[in-house]
Length: 280
Image 1 (spheres, rainbow, N blue to C red):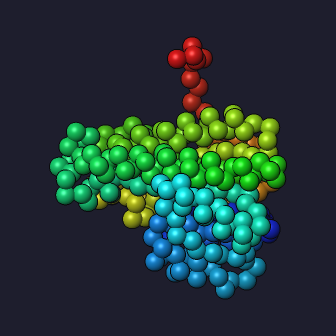
Image 2: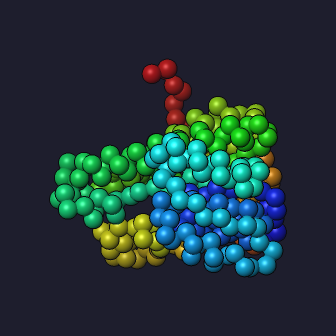
Image 3: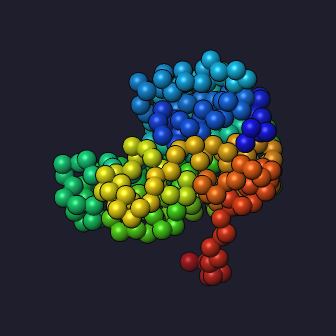
């Protein structure tokens, strides 16, 4: 991980004020990248950027408030990034909402889909699926002009997508996986790649709702530190990952004792092979 330098690289990380996003954004800054920490929680951005602002051999860290469900906000975020740093090479689509938002709603009777708050349910879909699309759509035209770009979509394990009481979160992450695969094909040969990255288990962040946290503890499954995302996102942001697109990487499987290419191969999840499409 320490061998990868990203000096001169410009990145946007959404949802960067807390949790996985903050860990990845800080890791990119420490590797020399100039990073925009974007988050709807504007009040928390100062602390997130200050944590790496004065460290040696780092890039710049800039906090910008952004609601990824707003097309205008996404366009403003990219415009301010270009104005400040003159380029955009990497987009990490990390921002999102999950079951914790349903759990906290007074209109949710249970996490079963028919007893959950329908307004929050729809808002999670809009944030995770539409927000990922709006950010990628806004950023990609600038990447295409330069013939180089990296889009990294943060998703989740296949088991989590299908787990009971886990919609709409699981639904949105399955949709983002589809976005990743479709966009990777559409961008093939352009120099812009699209890959997905997952922790490989529940991460120790406020994103994990209380019911899941208790269930995991009962099963003896420890929560993962957000830092498991840092090494793979550095590799994905670098030229070392040239030509790798439409793939899925698992943070907890990254082995820092291996050369980056070997570590990436170990962390790459085998694809799920689907039958040939009949066009429907």
